[in-house]
Image (cartoon, one colour):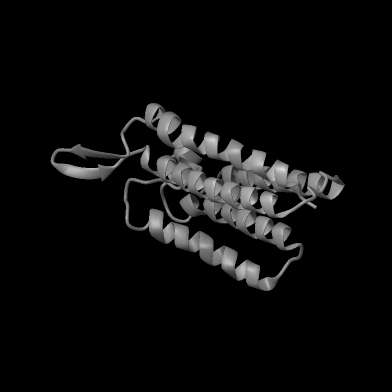
Length: 191
């Protein structure tokens, strides 16, 4: 059983980390602001997505913190931090690491195995903004993340989670990639 105090400290950690990411790190580390004007045209800048993601994590961390503080007042006994809780957090971290590895390496590996061959060899950097190469890492890594974490939280694997995970990843592609020509889905901006 999860300890309420552990939940409170995790909520505080993620709230502080998200606030620093959204309001300090992303604006200072990005080439362009969240929204900028260039030649009388308003554009979405490099800092927009990290700031939106950090703000969302901050919001949900604060909500989680408030819920845990409320539940802590209602309960008399705080359950211990046991092996099952440790296994859950280790599995959570392992799934997160696995999904990031799949996201980062699936596209280059797919291009190396199934990409065009011949005298003119191409690199993933050259192909990272073309269909289907730009979607391979994002789709496989995103599916691994959403499906793995929802299955871990529910404690079982369900077919409905496969469908909802695919729909979640496709929804993110429709929101962030389809309407904008200049945005590269993760991890393609890193190559």
